[in-house]
Amino acid sequence: MSNSNFSQLQARQDDFDFFTADIGDITPGWEDKKRSDGIVDRKMKTISYQNKEYQVGERFILSLCSKFGIGTSIFSLFDPAEVFDRVQKVHPRGRVRVVTEKTAIGTERCLAATSPAKSFVDFDTLIGILGRSSRIGKIRSARYIEGSVSTVHVMDEAPWEISGDLFYQAFTLDTPIDGYGLPSIYLSLIRESNETLLTAESKTFRSEVQLGKAGDRPEIPLTRALDTFNNEEGFQALRQRLESARESYASLHECDSLMKVFRRVINQTDTQSTQDVFGAFHDLTGDVSKKYGIATEDSLSSKKARLLPMDCSTLDLVFFSMIVTTHRRHMIQQPRPLTQWMGQLLDNEYDLEGSITEELNEQI
Image 1 (cartoon, rainbow, N blue to C red):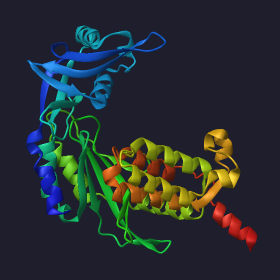
Image 2 (tube, rainbow, N blue to C red; image 1 turned 90 degrees about the vertical axis):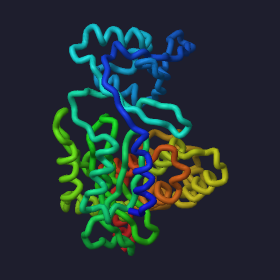
Image 3 (cartoon, rainbow, N blue to C red; image 1 turned 60 degrees about the vertical axis):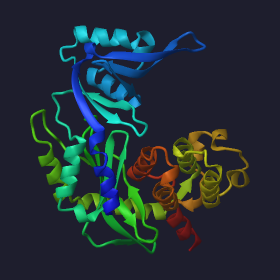
């Protein structure tokens, strides 16, 4: 990991804090928006505690609902103040731990509200773990996004060769520093030719690090996992899925699903860069209107779209998404949907599994 990369993380150590409070002592602020069907959507915007106001976002709301076992739709029936008051009266464990962050513009916001009875790794603890880890010299990158720190660690194993490219085994440690979820390790690969990163974000290629309860020392299991991680069977399975992707045509459905993710996560204010990415993608996959005489996949059923091959392999789709997530990072508002797309694609049977090999056999 470059010194500047680690220094950027260290420079943020004073930006995070937390407080513990009864839910009834927290005052929510929200906006009402009446829909055409008459239902009122209430979007929580702030909370106040001890005369201090904090901004809140979706992560805070989701974590709060998870903590108390309620759905977000409850705010269509009751305003947040009513919900907070009712939870305080009837829930046996109405106390929450709220992690806060100082923003770049000087305001403060709440990241997540979780149970004080659960252990979590705060930002300072994580920085200490990374600094002391035996893998510190093998960290390729580190990044903080929305309550979680993601670090990519290169392993010592010899690289693989797939389609003439060398791939180095790595893993991505995703650590929530606000207590919303457990640290997770995802199998990853680094493609040597263009230094792009594949993170297989799915259950099959994930390992969770259990931290224990409040009072335990979460740095012990996390340090152990970081220093000793190895998953030979998992990497072998990942390699087999990539080799199979090379032998499978990408379906119209798979191509369209990736394009939909691009449209969700790419900041399209940079018109030229967006056109470059979308244009390169269409050059790779082929023109669906010329190939099948339809405007979009929406003209077909999902079942039909899964049967129609495009002009590239499934591996080409994976490579393209790796290039975008690595070298077009400045355009990506939130990379997680892309890594989840790659993980889910590799975790399941491809729509046209083995179709390139079958075609070659027929030609022979």
